[in-house]
Length: 358
Image (cartoon, rainbow, N blue to C red):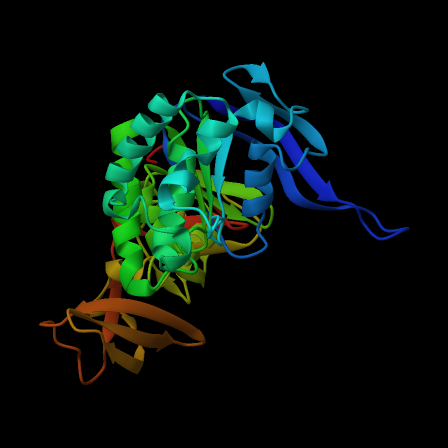
């Protein structure tokens, strides 16, 4: 296992003749601690897979360096990095048995057969594949084949990290939660560094101890699921994490407090100084409630999702979403809403305004 560090890493793919390079990865300096469980979360095209391939050595970055336990591996090939990678589509040898698939990387490295058998048996038990060891891989379902792909990474004892590139995309939805739980359990058992690429916030938040949120080729926030939810450092994080995402509304400032559509609000994180640039407030739907006073709104839509309702309201030109419990009443006339001050954040040019209270 290794501590993986990026130092000022950037990467651009070769541009068409006569055009300036476009960076798929903007400058990133990031550390993945030894034995951690990380997720790279972001939309398609944000640079997640490029970053993963730079860690594995499938790509050499245009700029910067990659260190494993302080050792520069930037120019080293994949084989020298001792990285296991699990791809979106399972890579298995259909004509081989499950046992031979799992033993393949060990035999390639010259491990004695007795030790290889011991290791394969151990990993097969972890993956619930023990009763299929002598079955041909061709007969397995997609989730069974993905378990083999995962097992080939786990079976190697010298692996520095296991990288997962959207590994559950082809798995049936009702089986995804089982494999997510199994991955979490395996990480707790073996403690190897795991980095998991996904665009699915549920996968990221249930698997990882630390989530690295990426947007437009850069890292915008790294934190626990609770930190990302409670205090998004960038409006994209607030929008992307949560369902529905955070409400982002234009504002002005008055004595450090936000003013939204001529309504003076109270934030537990007031600005310390007058600010220029694009000013906005962010408030999650969970922290918007109906009240006897506050901001007058018009109710546009109510979606009943069982334990709660998603209510869309409008104040002047701005839509606001709120979550209302199934037992809470929705005002029939002259509704007004209030924002929880302790969860109301001010943003300047998309970045949260850091204050002495933060």
